[in-house]
Length: 186
Image (cartoon, rainbow, N blue to C red; front, side):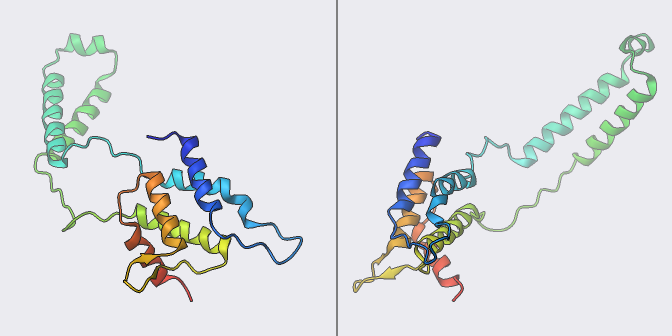
């Protein structure tokens, strides 16, 4: 996996390869001065690899079993052992009550998942930011053009493809770019 600096440099090169328009006013600040920050912005938007997750039902079952064991241990402590803890009986009673509530709640968990495949929102957000920068740098609407054979292309699509490749985004650059170009304000 490339380093942060390598990714920033590659993203900067991708944006600098665009036909950048110059400001009409002499005293205007050119938007291309922000190109180095664009790479950092996009890298920070990239989702990190998800941690190895445990299925929620299994995690809740484990929590239920653990809370039951702790309750059992706390209930079996003698008065001498409780005084050695130097915690006060009220604090331990409150802890036991909370553990019992936790145990009860996790006994029959209701884990609801939305139907179908989970949606990937990050690629759409990244494409939207790329489109905004593309528009401000070039002055052109982010569009996907098609040649006589129906093959998609264009500067915007190429930029989105480069950005997705650099960031390791696992989504279709074509579908994301087409969605943005369809929904771009007139």
